[in-house]
Image 1 (cartoon, one colour):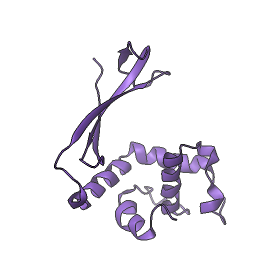
Image 2 (cartoon, one colour):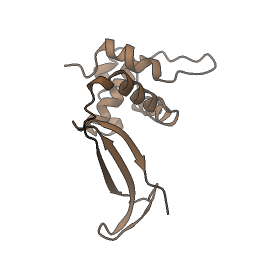
Image 3 (cartoon, one colour):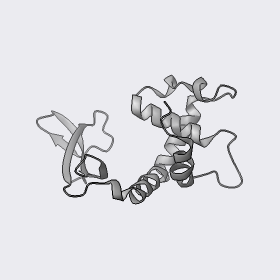
Image 4 (cartoon, one colour):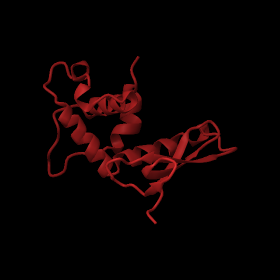
Length: 147
């Protein structure tokens, strides 16, 4: 079973991904790269453990290139544009009869964007807040600011 159909990929995903500037265009299929990123996020495997041969059997591809696109699309807002577009185009499927707001404290062992010390967790944590519809579909996420 394919994770994302070709039709959905071309209609809802690819138009929102940033492309190379100054005439550069990749020789690799951005749709396949996107599918590899989603697979990595879903399975939680290491970048170097991605099954590149499954998607790029005839071409030489490295996990570093897949990570490059993931990092690029995170920083330039491509994933945010995709998410907003998907919510707008599918809002009739959302159950907004009731919404839930929930928070999360995740340990930040190496510092990163840690917010503050949480006594019950015995470490610094990053704080996030999530807004979901009545079916648990995430609508939005926010980060707590440092105090």
